[in-house]
Length: 200
Image (cartoon, rainbow, N blue to C red; front, side, top):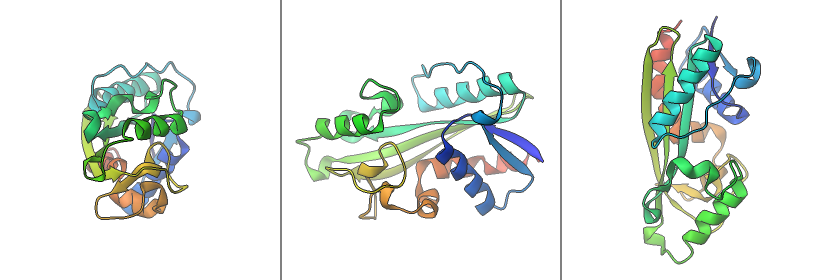
């Protein structure tokens, strides 16, 4: 069994990757999260792009553990905010990972923006780095628009205010399998599947 590290402490991301590998019939890979390996210093996300941050996180994880590693950086790009919060999505309100404050700030910033200009995209860059020095970075986007108030209890981050194109439900109202099939992270992780098969 080949061990692959997902450089995240987010249990939902870990479960998502495991579901995708099952759905894509990838066997022989055991996905571990950061909680399953000895702690190591995690560099701050200082890249100007999602791709730079994902690649740096994956390289750091390989260097610290000797395991092939996947890392992602994702966020929300709002059309009316010139593609912000972007790489600052997790700390848009000033505190890292405060989902409620981040969502509230984006909604406040879009307070007077009409429906037709509330377009946005979830963006995900995912990187796979190996101990041999190989690196693959992929990117996927999920287009939609933003509601005026949060709805739904699934997901995390900006999911409760993001309505995917072609749907009337927010990302937080989709069930996990639906979200995996559509989402930016699901699509980015699927782009890595052929490279993961090559590790087995």
